[in-house]
Figure 1 (spheres, rainbow, N blue to C red):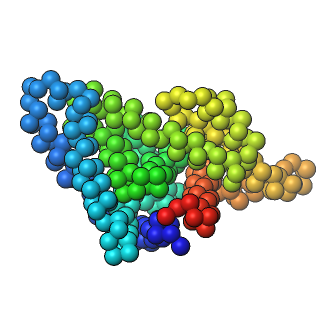
Figure 2: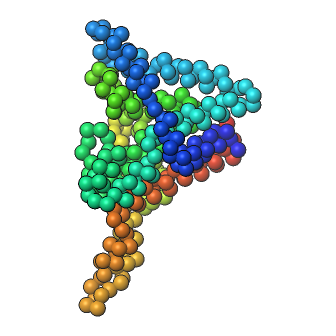
Figure 3: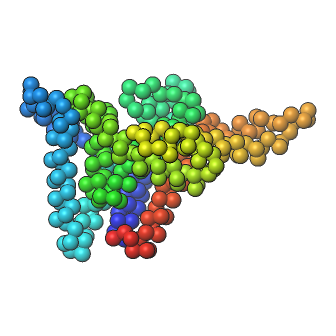
Amino acid sequence: MSLTLIAVVIALIVGHTMPTLAALRRYDWFIGWLDWLRIQAGDNEAGRTRWALVLALLPPLLLVLLLQLGLRDGLYGLPYFVFALVTLFYAWGPRDLDHDVEAVVDARDSESRRTAATRLFPERVQPSLEGPALVEAVFRCALWRWFGVLFWFLLLGPVGALLYRLVALCAQGEARKRLPDDAAQAASTLLTLLDWPVAQLMTLALALVGNFDSVLSAWKDAGGAAFKRDTSFLGAAARASVKSELAEEAMDYVDTETESGIPNTSAVVMQLGELPELRDAMSLAWRILLLWLAVLALFVIAGWVA
């Protein structure tokens, strides 16, 4: 069994079963580092351009890369395994997606539900409780919290996981506020480039675990077949897949008729529950993740992953 696969599985289990440990995923040090760089730059022109992003990312990533290379061959790879596990867990999230979705579903009223939904939407974006918007929000969060980190970890190791997380922080939230406009825009562009192959693989997995025809059609219509700095095709494919699955699920109950011969739609509503799109989107995200792990396991068996 590959140490890479073991590290991924342990990080997932610990992150899901011990949500209190998510408090360890703090990036105050990075915010402080950006503040220090901003003070040092002062009126320096270079400090107000996109090069500020390079200055912000290079030192921590270089440190992680040196540790990654230095620990790889010692003690049968055990120090590297521990380092990779800690880095992956740290870069994951930082919030637990399952718990954020459950908070929306379990909210008692529309106001508290809307408040809970803000955790699924980017900063400065007004949360929506409409089904399609919630589906997109779940998949966007799954991309940023799970699959982006996992993909670049598998490709580049610990430095890849941290690279993705730091770029995501620079593209949104408090870290973005510490960067000049050009650097923040460069971070958004870089995040889109990092997201693009991940979103494509997520869409492929979605087609395999969901409705293939619906996903493929939505992916094409949203421009997924073209290389553009845009990942909106993932949201379109997710909406199409959820819509198709809910329609199929509802058909199982439409046959229940009232005495007047009209389909008993109340039975459908009762069976699907509140926010069925949100529930189904979360289920699909988990199925995609399990498919990724299954493929990784096959790569390990084939000897393609060390």
